[in-house]
Length: 106
Image 1 (cartoon, one colour):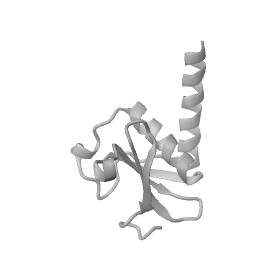
Image 2 (cartoon, rainbow, N blue to C red):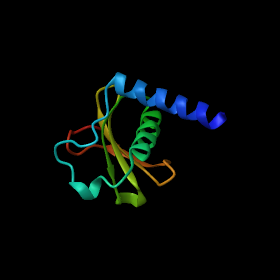
Image 3 (cartoon, rainbow, N blue to C red):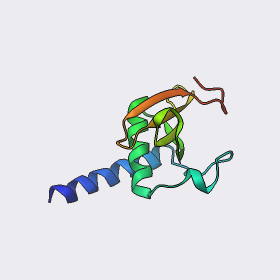
Image 4 (cartoon, rainbow, N blue to C red):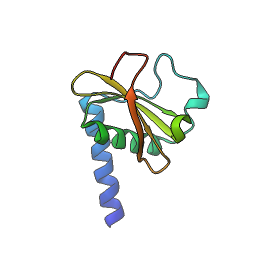
C-alpha cells in the first residue's frame, strides 16, 4: 500500500512540474540519441531532484551526462529567470549546478 501511495505522490509531483512549466525531453542543441539513454521514470526522478535543488523553476531538458562524474543533466530555468545545468549522479544527488553556457545563465 505504501508503494502505491508513493507512486501516486510521485505522479502528482510530475504532473505539477509539467503544469508549472513543462519538461521537454529533447531540445535544440541536444547531443542526439546517445544523450537520451534513460527511462521516463529516471527522467522524472532527475527532474524532481533538479527542481528541488534549484528551488523550483522549469525543467527544459533532461540528458544523460558524463561531465563531473554525473549521470544526468537537467537544464532548469530558475524562478529568477536564469538558466542552469544541474548535474546529478546515479542516485539523483547533485554533483554540480552551473550556469548554462547556451543561454548565458548563472
